[in-house]
Amino acid sequence: MRIIVISDTHGLTCSIEDVFLRNKDADLFIHLGDGERDLDSFLSENPAYTNKTIHVAGNCDWGSLSPGFEIIPAGGHKIFATHGHLFAVKNDLEIIKRNAKENGCDIVLYGHTHVRYNKFEDGLYIMNPGSASCPHDGKRRSFGHIDISSAGVVMNIADI
Image (tube, rainbow, N blue to C red; front, side, top):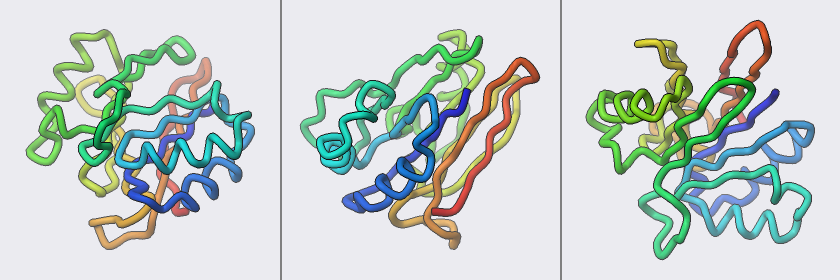
């Protein structure tokens, strides 16, 4: 199973287009917020992606009716996907890790900081794909991909 993760597009719809079209064979696309209108615009022009796309609301997705987090079953694993602002990810990851574990998740996805993060710690696969519009870590715009197979979970972050 291949999952594509993108976050913080902040009006740069071309990032969504680049990432989705480059990975059109993916099983699932997850947008981690701060770009709901960008995603809606892309999906209206590319409806084939609608049924395999999940979105959570970010702190800049004003008026959004999307949830603040989602629990997503995927290939025998459970994903805790959120923008991150509701879980104080700019301070540390303890709150988000606790919430993921309380919900039986072993994969944690978040955005908000615009800084890439990809580690296995405390029994959790944790990824922030960075920002698809304006990274804050001196690196290029980026997205994440997750491969889940019977052999395990592999997560990577790639430049756009």
